[in-house]
Image 1 (spheres, rainbow, N blue to C red):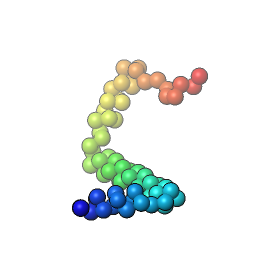
Image 2 (cartoon, rainbow, N blue to C red; image 1 turned 60 degrees about the horizontal axis):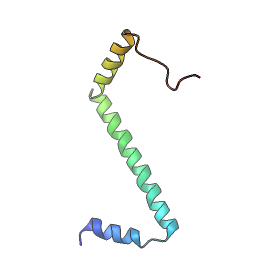
Image 3 (tube, rainbow, N blue to C red; image 1 turned 90 degrees about the vertical axis):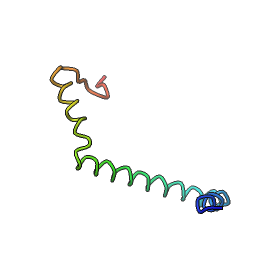
Length: 70
């Protein structure tokens, strides 16, 4: 049995409240990693194409508010 399988087995044996705590911890950790990756990609210029695309669409008048104010 490898480490991941051991961890999975341990998690399967947790009572509901401890399981909930693990789930919340994993969600927070995943969100933090996502934010860090987005920050890193942005600083490295990997997302510049999105700004260029937005500028192009704005110049063509293709932008609209979201969510709609209605």
